[in-house]
Length: 91
Image (cartoon, rainbow, N blue to C red):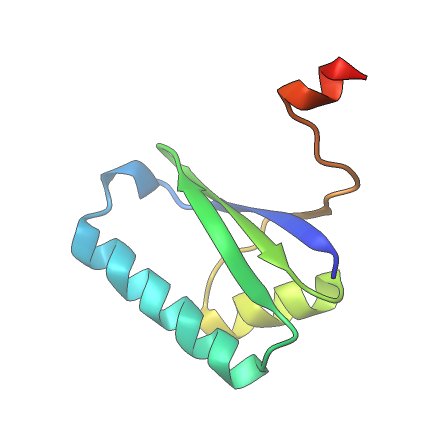
């Protein structure tokens, strides 16, 4: 299944409380349950003013549907073409 990185502009994201992040996560998981097994949330990175999410999904449309149903911004959605890490240098 394709992997996507979603950039969500959320001013003050880094200042969200644990309770607020739990609520956002619960909303996301609820939408994912409704959408079925064709989309998976892998993990997210919270920075000062953005949240970067990694999802597995069949296509960008499913990612955008999740965002719409959850009330989340999806300012940028990019499909991951390759994954590299330090082991890649050992070719």
